[in-house]
Image (tube, rainbow, N blue to C red):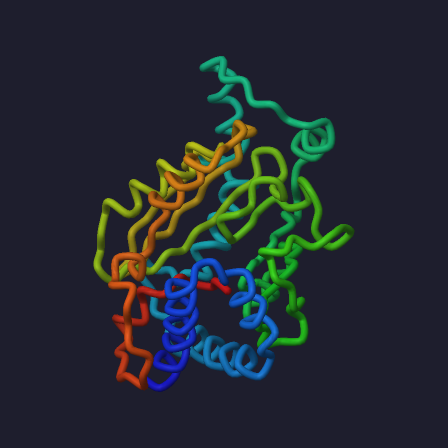
Length: 277
């Protein structure tokens, strides 16, 4: 598949360059973000894949509709995965969760229109849902409604600031999430490695997230976590341990790879992180 081939090649080159000269990782990333022509080509390929090849349903849902329904169930639903049921359970079990005054007021009043930060959005897919307030960002936007932002260089207010979002679709999200906010992760995994889901859960638990729901689709893990704790101070050893737990299939490949044009099928492409920069 030509689209998958071009996208995979970008990932391969970036990882190869960093693995070859890790001390230059910062400058390699800066050069990558500055290459607008390559990023624009990447964005258009990603959009076509998302709209025409990732729309297959599993359990009656696509990855997009799963995210939407999970948000609705958490903030407005009355099932066990809902915010209010979770809070009642915390009180029964005498589990104390620190909630800032701003978030406490919003929770008590009811969050009618959750604020969603979609990181690595590409083309702002959540804009179709009028009952969500979505901010879409990407280093390679394929739509003018997406803000061109490098999330690794966290932008200043007022667009993005502490406790400003009820739901975030990305890992590095703790500070930006509101108290008891929802973190959604959609992680393709064509090798069907159940241990990856377990290790990711361990990593997220260690930085203050509790599992809300999880389903396994074909070649896909869909996970929802809520923000429950302010994480303790972390040191270099902590970061290394968490990074090992959050490994992805490419981390298991040899470091030395030959950069060349290759034929890539859909299943191989499914190992790329979904909706990431």
